[in-house]
Image 1: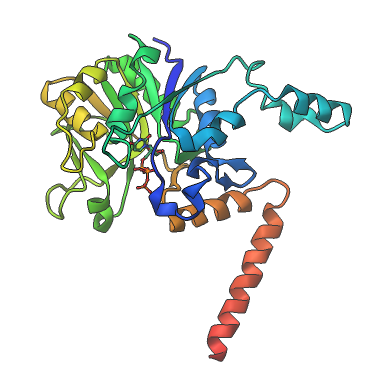
Image 2 (image 1 turned 90 degrees about the vertical axis):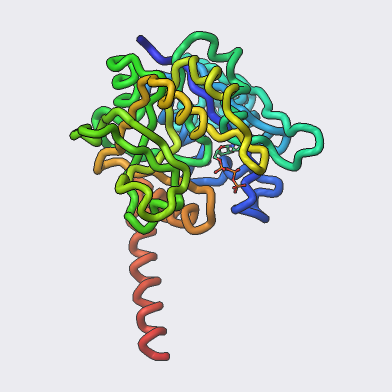
Length: 311
Ligand code: UTP
């Protein structure tokens, strides 16, 4: 089974990053030299994805422009003698990658879109009967593994004939209540790739000993659309993807979790602290300016230490 389609939900309001995100989609904020969404798309392409649907909204036009052909700019750069190696990577047509856009509508009388389940539902006609990846547009998975996370997920999904394969990463015990947490089936010894008996959104302390948090990447079979249709909206009217997955588990469908490897990290840029950390890490890893940024951080730390000793 090859998986060549992916859906990127980007229709959220990004309220936690206001006021920046009033006019700029959070997915267009830079991490190092590339917008967040560009890192996400490169991750998908590296895993063999060639057709990408953005589930977008009217405030996210910049994303559409970013992935549009811009032949006059390319020609200008070429004529001007620019080094084309980096810019050539933007030529998605040559790389055999197609982009599609649809919109998640905000229902009349509501103030925001109806959640991640509703966003994925908007991709049904694009997906058809195929298995597909869902990647949240505000999270990067950085990997130096020879088989990166999505590749392992797609492989596990096919080998096990799963209905759903979820990316997870281990979080500290005291943070479990802030995440969607998956619960491995009794007796599952290998948490790198395990069958699940439940998935719980933000569990109260003591509800589970699992520390495996859902991490912004999924592989689904097209059965997920039936599950989403069966989900009851939350009190705020949202349709959570987690509820659709939970329903699949209760119907004895094969739902598995693949864990991030030690050399992998999830960057969720949805809040200011996480975004600042992400930018620093990517700037420090820049092949040209990384050493200077690290030297700057060392100098800055020294200044702060001296100032705190003096006070
Ligand atoms: P989040 O809940 O983290 O994003 O959704 P948000 O709603 O934009 O954030 P806040 O809480 O207002 O700050 C994770 C991903 O799912 C998309 C978001 O754009 C983000 O990439 N999403 C979320 C949708 O596409 N539709 C939705 O209804 C909700």
